[in-house]
Image 1 (cartoon, rainbow, N blue to C red):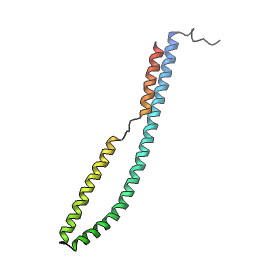
Image 2: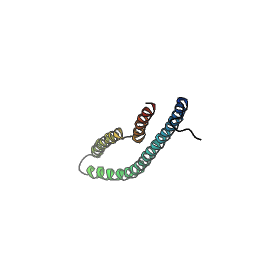
Image 3: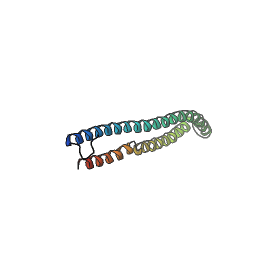
Length: 130
């Protein structure tokens, strides 16, 4: 006949608690790995799209900027028209880089689900010891 939970020795109870805690920790580590993998996959896809889109846009932008500089060269010295266009583009580029860096700093890469379940597990373990 199986022992009821009231008939089990302290050693058996602590052994069960130890096994359950070990299993729980392994599951939490696996959850953290899965969650971080999902987040990194998403970031990787976004970075890839950003790189390809940026390269295509860059090629188009070069032709547009050349046309603007050539157009301005009709009313001023060619070197001055290219300098003005270059300074404007560099200023816009600096602004966009700063905006991108700010967005990356604000990205939440913390595994929130894992942290929440670890807190719950801690509470559960404390209740089991009482």
